Amino acid sequence: MTLQQELGRRVFDGFGFSSRSASLFARPQSGEELAAILRRAGEEGLTVGLRGSGRSYGDAAMNGGNVVLDVTGMRKILSWDPQSGIAEVEPGVTIEQLWRSTLADGWWPAVVPGTMFPTLAGCAAMNVHGKNHFKVGGTGDQILDAELVLPTGERKRISREENSELFHAAIAGFGMLGAFSRIRLKLKKVEGGRLKVRQIPARSLDEQFDLIDEHTPNSDYFVTWVDCIKGGSSLGRGQVHQAVYTHGDEDPEGKSLMDPSRQDLPGHILGVPKSMVGIILKLFRFNTGMALLNLGKYLASELTPRSWYKQGHVAFAFLLDYVPNFRSAYEPEGFIQYQPFVPKEHAREVFKKILRLQQARGLPSYLGVMKRHRADNFLLSHAVDGYSFAMDFAVTKANRAELWRLCHDMSEIVLEAGGRFYPAKDAVLRPQDFQRAWGQERISRFRALRRQVDPQRVLRTEWAARVGVDEAG
Ligand SMILES: Cc1cc2nc3c(=O)[nH]c(=O)nc-3n(C[C@H](O)[C@H](O)[C@H](O)COP(=O)(O)OP(=O)(O)OC[C@H]3O[C@@H](n4cnc5c(N)ncnc54)[C@H](O)[C@@H]3O)c2cc1C
Image (tube, rainbow, N blue to C red; front, side, top):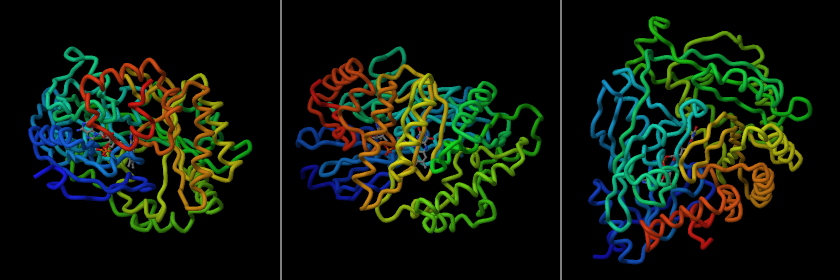
């Protein structure tokens, strides 16, 4: 039987469900099975798109008409050393599995995205960042070594010392240089189950930047919420969230939260049952409605005391995971997230310009989040020494073409300033934007590696095809 006859079919989408496609579906249980599927796909002229938990917003883990290879069947923690905090995992192990297995020993994943459901392979392939990126870097900076299965069937151990070029390109290589089949990484030692957290309102985008610059040097985590609808002198107002680890006997009560089952969250947010949040968002999902919700959130932040309080790691890191169906607010056409990364010298002006542009076009983002970042050594990493601004936009039949045009115009402003974009969030990038964001030299080195490890071009995703990762350059 051929692979094509053997595999079932499934429809896949991204987390933003703004596009969908049907594919053949494979879910190997071992590295051998994974290697065999890649090899057989190559022999049959099929392409393979690697997929973790499918938490990328756009088309980065989709491969319509060909094979989607889901690695979540390989989800064993192969070893865990509570002395050194080093774990070795299969690619489908999730961030959730990891913290649930390590917190009682006093370790927390050093880098976590805003959701705990991604796999470690998905995090490595995107070089995921957390709210502490400015301090510890991305997932790749925590990885000691890994094993890659190449489409040729060969298995390569990669690390900073061994096959170093491939290591620095496969991390942040969006699944185009081989499949991670094993990852060894170091976690962060924590002394308590809670963080010290505080929130400060920011009256404008300038004030947001001032607060970030003033407080990140003394923070372990930092993130800001931005009201993207309010204009004028309040343009970019919002609220910053700062967190630091507790040490020693600072939080005796928080010790009990080292028990992972005590980290799970209650069923209410600000007195509202979480199951209602999606419904409320849906009712307010138009510009004036969201302006009202933002106003309420901003005024609440003005009234919130600025003093420190304690919050569990999970509540701080993964609040959205405890809001079932918040995405239903964006049904039926879904939503996109657009996240530019801009060098520090230009970020203030660039973010003001793109906020003004979306407001002028009547297409403001309904949720904006800013973070501080640092640069790293991974070939096609999105990281820059600067700031990112993630913005959610509702997609409708009526606004789709106009929204894409807006994103392309915002990208022009970002690219002028030497910025990049985050493939895990992207739905709009064009080949010319990809070229300008990473530059010809880096892209040529990536293509040269592709020719070595995947001469038949077996690996493919809709994102990679859209931005022209393989175009002759
Ligand atoms: C609510 C929410 C909040 C988020 N917050 C953040 C955040 O704060 N910071 C951040 O950085 N990201 C964030 N993300 C994005 C998310 O962390 C990334 O998209 C991550 O890559 C998802 O992992 P996954 O397992 O779902 O991978 P998928 O989305 O399924 O795939 C991601 C990439 O990994 C590749 N891949 C999958 N398996 C392998 C493998 N075995 N070997 C090689 N490549 C492989 C795929 O081809 C694809 O290119 C968020 C996403 C959501 C939904």
